[in-house]
Image 1 (cartoon, rainbow, N blue to C red):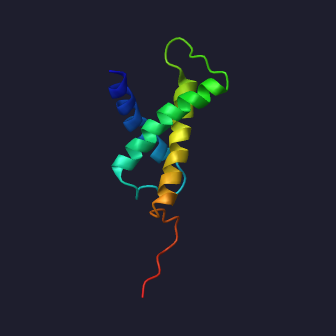
Image 2 (cartoon, helix red, strand yellow):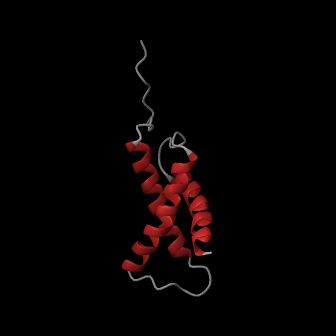
Length: 94
């Protein structure tokens, strides 16, 4: 059941990360956005605990903000690596 929760959180966090990421990141496919979101949830948890996060009772907003920021970084990296990052530059046309 936890895997389904991570996937659902990954979808939401991935879309939020895509929204927060600078530039035009709408060119990466949705499956890659979800993958970045799942990675953001998992890596964000590790970053959060590495810096002393212990999970406050209730909704831990700091942990979710860290996950969104990590997902945004992953979206930027994925967009750059796939070559779909337009970055405001126009392609050369002949």
